[in-house]
Length: 598
Ligand SMILES: [Zn+2]
Image 1 (cartoon, rainbow, N blue to C red):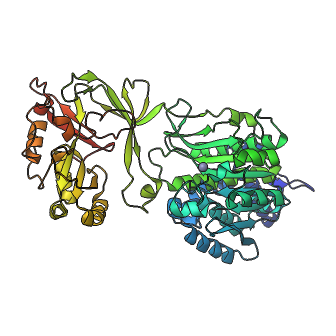
Image 2: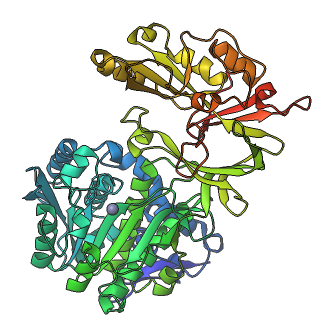
Image 3: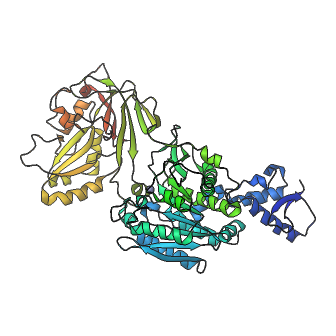
């Protein structure tokens, strides 16, 4: 179309212009600058790129595709191969973080300063990383809650990205416009234990007024010393929170934090809200269908740091990393922080985020709970021993600790939580299981006695027990054997396998003990639940209405109540059977996961 991109006289602006005759060298230099200008993260390319790529001449289209390397999508794409910290965020302990900070400082000597800004209650160093030389200061802090890890590595990745590309116009603009003050791990004692609170047992984010914690005092000191124009408070939220009533998981929640109970919109808070809009615009296209971006609860929280920093004059953006839709691993949360923060900083450096509208932030749906479950089993009938069966859906969440998900902890801590027993027709479901015509009963709890049982209590034996309807195992051992049994049980844990819990044997024996006593690995499968009980143990009950049966079942008579484990059996009636013992085992659910069929 005969247009090219050139710097405007005496300004820093680059525009598409009718093509002018220039030497090849001049033109390519000019185009290179323009392409950087039109494609910085979070920017809207159209303001300097009036046409669509297909309408421009091939060489510029080519440049535009190369230019995409600076877009949010390109930042997202480049992160896996260029990130500075490859350790998954939940696995990053204070000692390794310090090593990575030293390595980052060594790599960018003279351009990045790492200093010990303070110490935690237990004396662990808390480091401050300073990047950039600009007059406006921005304070970013992560892992104020020790079990909310996602943003910590993103801050190092971000610093390395900017400094490694400091000749790139967009990186240079950020480095020259702002000074980034970053505290990647404010609560190292909590991070060491993977606990929310600090070593005093205090929630640092409720200590802004008391300042009883050294971590809180450090944050206040940094704020008062540097008077940043913007703060980023980086957390993780409950991974089951949704975007309004959409049923989509709130993968990122944002808040332009209020500085008073009335939510007064000061110029600073408006900047924070525009920063939220910039982050949302950059991240929304990167999320899969089951995820989204929400707005965090706006209520004034008078003891919290975000609220008080805003009040003290540093408007705060709260970023909460949350739910993981299908196809998203935990690392994607760190990746989103990296892209989103760069987008906000780019906007801040460019024009104080003038290109982003607060209305886009206001339009975000609120964080919501109680409208979605990971799994809903619909249309079944619950049948408890000795009771009439009744219609009830089951809705539950499947719980996976971040450290397990990231591969730096064993399976322990996997769990489930029943959310609803009854009418769940209005609940959105991550997965729907059709149980129409099926009968749902509590699973079987097995009881195993003595440490000698470890000779047969293997993974294979547990899997065979699961196929017969066992959903949990109590292993009774004497006090001297308790520790050894605990070690064995931890090694046996796996998804869809009955968890084994070591318990101290009770004096007086088994008469009142819960569970169905099992003394050997089952050899055979079984066509019905009754046959399964028989295969597991000679003392199997003969009738579903037998008084002793509830003790053999997980949860006793209280298997189906909110907060209970989602461990149960789905039975398929055949030949008109009405007694569950005569029905075929269809699916064994253990802690919200179906046991493998074989
Ligand atoms: Zn938090």
